[in-house]
Length: 253
Image 1 (tube, rainbow, N blue to C red):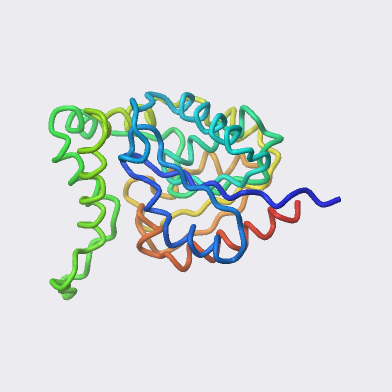
Image 2: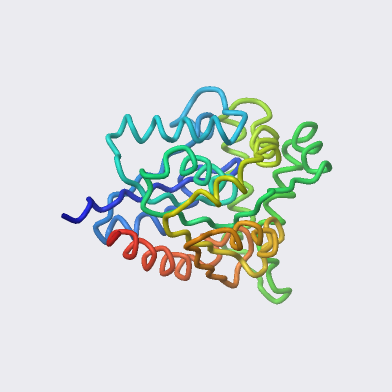
């Protein structure tokens, strides 16, 4: 008997929410997949409560959320901080997961002291820096006055989540990423397929920063897209195509 088709669970990154996945999650739901895209605690009005201060605590929260939803078999799709949460959750309950798709990932996930200090002392300035570094710069000839740029939309999203969430949320998230020490143990223990989607122009987690993970994955595949860290927005079609092909493989396992 074939196992039940896994639920695709989307995990957002630092100071983001489920909406960063809308183009991919909506398209995969339309193709018949069961989809869950939760907001982490403290990340938006729909998920109140204190923020979780470690990747390990976030993984525990995710596993409890899956239990509460009756989700027994899942494909985890995580971006940046969400990729670390996926890794740690799979380390804790490896038999539960049909596969992991890790986007904009790195381990160790280095965060500069300057950015951490800015996030603590002037969160608005730090949000501006993260929004800028997460996106490819627009060509000088690209004049889009009629609508906000992807960078500006990202800044607005983070500002809203920061306003609705607990104080210092960006610092909490970034510090959790930097402190996570379980990446090597987690990736070495995985026996499920792992897809790495990396942005060739990613300035936050460049492809070389994922080398320790890609080299250690027993069943790993690497896909690079012409995008920065915010690849789901900059190259939505390419990311969707890679995820759809991977989901089809995992559904057969």
